[in-house]
Figure 1 (cartoon, rainbow, N blue to C red):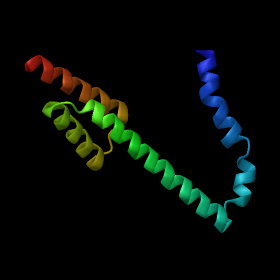
Figure 2 (figure 1 turned 180 degrees about the vertical axis):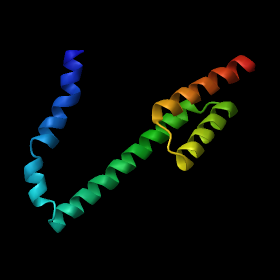
Figure 3 (figure 1 turned 120 degrees about the horizontal axis):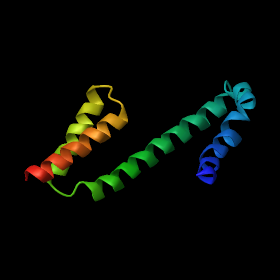
Amino acid sequence: AGAAAVGVFLPVYLFVVIPYPWFDRISANPQVKAFVAGVTAAAAGAIAGACLVLARRAIVDAPALAIALATLGITWRVKVPEPVLIAAAGAAGLFVRWAG
C-alpha cells in the first residue's frame, strides 16, 4: 500500500507541486498557453477514447444501455457526485438482474 501511495502521489509532486513557481512565471506566455491548450485537447481526446473502449465492453445488452444513457443524462443535467452515480448504477444493474 505504501509503494502504491508513493507511485500515485510522487509524480504529482515532482511534475506539479515542486515546479509550480516556475509554471506560474511563464503562464502568461502565449506559446505556453497554446501548448497547454493542445495538451488539454489531447487529454480530453484520450479520456473520450477510454470511455469508448469501456462502453464497448460494458454495454452488452439493452438494460446496460438504458442504465448508461440514464447515467449520462443525469450527469449532463444535474451535479451528482461520481460515487453516488456509480453506486446507483450498480444498484440499478443488480435490480434489473434480480427482477429479470
